[in-house]
Amino acid sequence: MSGRSDSQVVPIDEVPPEDTNPYRPVVMVVDDEVIIADTLAEILARNGYAAVTAYDGDEALETALLTPPQMLIADVMLPGMNGIELAVTIRRTFPDCKILLFSGRAVTSAMLAPAERAGYHFSLLSKPVHPDVLLARVSESLRQVDTTAA
Image 1: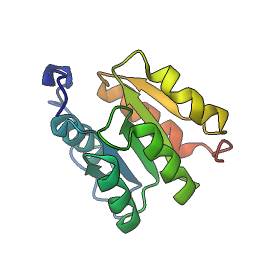
Image 2 (image 1 turned 180 degrees about the horizontal axis):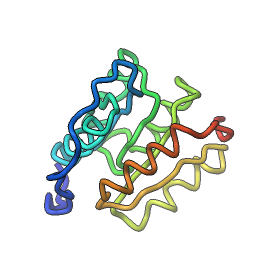
Image 3 (image 1 turned 30 degrees about the vertical axis):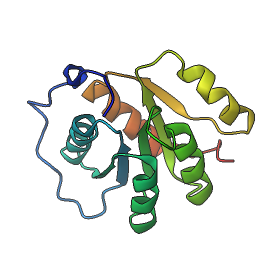
């Protein structure tokens, strides 16, 4: 677990109940801070998405092979394989998977540069992630036709 404070998590007190639609898009949330991953997944689940969580890149890849996601939401700073490396691997394995990265660090843009030079372009959110912003970005991303897949 990193040294970041759990106080960055935005409360979900008034999120509507989970949708029961069996054809909900699968959204994978990956963060090594368990409370953040679980909170974001809960927000998504209560808003009609089939949310799955993983807490590092290797676990995310294993989970994705069992439950292919329509969207990946990952922290850039993960132990071992970072979120950008995970995103590139997921995009290669699942070319139609939408990808949204998030980070609380200023160095993220520099970390994204090699992936961008290789033709991978990923959306980025800043931590802490507000539930309304998260839901809007997920909804928007899943509606778009992906023209950036490498």
